[in-house]
Length: 79
Length: 138
Image (cartoon, rainbow over all chains, first blue to last red; front, top):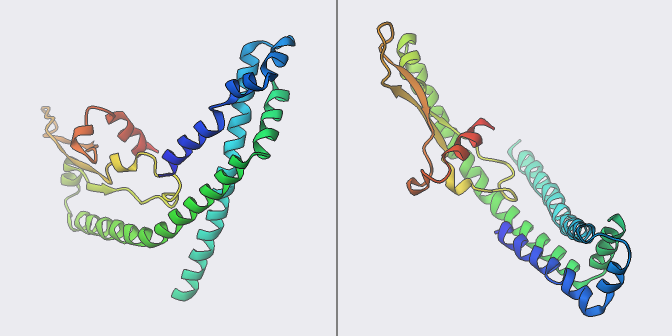
C-alpha cells in the first residue's frame, strides 16, 4: 500500500519539474548559464528525492516510536 | 547542481503538496502500525508453533546419520518486525524452506539432503527463484 502511494507521490512531486519551469520562463534563465543539462536534471532529481524522503522518514520514525511505546505498554501489562 | 537541488527542496518544502504528503504518509503509516499491532502477535504465534513443532520432530529423531542424510525438515522464517513499512515482496516469498532428502547416490553415500526453496505462489516459480534464495540468505 505504502509503495503504491509513494509512487504516486513521486509523480506528484516530479511531474512539473521541467515543464513548470518552462511555463514560468525560469528554465530559459537557468540554461542561459553555463550549466550542462544533465546537471540540471540531476539537481532536480536530488531535490525531489530529498523532498520525498523527508516526510517518509518522519512518518517511519514517528511510527517506530508509536510501536515501541505500544510494545512497552504490552510488556508492562504482561508483567 | 547543489544550488539547483537546494532551490528545488525549498520550493517543495513551501508547497501545499509537501504538507499533504506528510499528513497522508503519517496517516497511512499510523493505520499500518495499528494493523501491524493486531496482526504481528498472530504471525509470531503461528511461527513459534510451527518452529516448535519442527524442532520437536527433529529432537525425536535420534539417528544422527539419518538426520545428516535426510535433512532437518522444514525451516521457518521469522516474521519481520518492520512489516508495517517494508513488506516488499513478502507475499511472493515462502514462509519456510524444506531441508529434505535429495537422491544423489555414490558408492560411499546413499544420499544427501538439500534446501528446497519453494515459492509462495507456484506460478512465480520461473520469475524469481534467485530472489527467494537471496531472501533466505539474508
